[in-house]
Length: 440
Image (cartoon, rainbow, N blue to C red):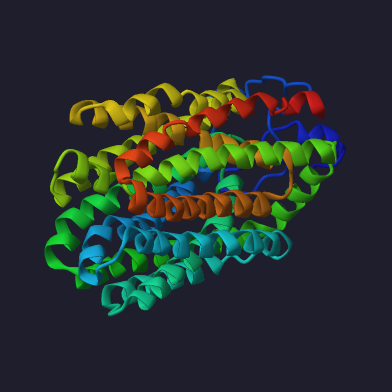
């Protein structure tokens, strides 16, 4: 922080970088600031990407690419469920247990990783996390039994628990003050990877069998190389980032009761989002195969289309939140899904595909807004917030997959979709989210 500038004044300024990608000197959001910073020729607050943000964009793009490779590997697991179900004679409940193991491992560890790295950042932990993912991938390709499948899923989940909190911190460091845009660019890499996984599974793994999963080790090795470079940048800028985080944590706090209520509402919204997404991401191929008698390969292509729409929604949600406010984005991205989810169980194949595209784009736009909103609610606690919300995302998705798998075994997959259609109605709770700039 420059001499003569008070912390309160500095916190009203967006993050600035020089052409050598120096780290932020202060962090906050225009949405939280009681007075908007003045517009000057040197700093135009309406510009989509100023020179400072452009300087850090290569780091953000590398991080997004690593997110793509990480989540592409992870999405192979649900994409090859039909293959594993046949090879190991699994029930729907056992399929759900694989997802629960993977996502619960990540859910339990991510908040702990976030708490630890807020106090002691670990720049090269990203490489170590990808190493765990690589180990799980290789075990998945050779696992001869159901317990070893669960162990492979746990290793991949452990890799995610390290990757997401620390990479979310780097994305905020490289944001140039446009936190929503940075989260969207980072997260869209993961969504694109998730959409590529089923496509690659349909054309590579399904025809060649479980052993061909090992070919994707190349993607993990590429990610580890990129993360080594990102870790070097992170380590170089870590000291100044700590000062910026300390300055952010000294701004006027939101009352504790409001924080608790707001976090509870956000978690309820995540419950709605990820329980419903679990019905689509884990069981959509089975639904299409049962209702419309599609082949496994054809159903994988429909899943690819849905996950592509999720990627588009993720990319749009952050910048829109920067412009119109994150509270509004959270509101319409979840509740707005309700009419389409109610129609989905009654649609033919064409309209099923069309409705899932709209549903995927809408509901995915919520997550970047939720993460940045929570980071603004708890300034200076980037790792904790990322760990909690990515952790709950994985945990709720895994719990949803397990519960819905048991239901599908008893009442059928089509009936499960009729029940899940009402979950987006929980979006009404967004009414209780406070406007942060009025609280500070």
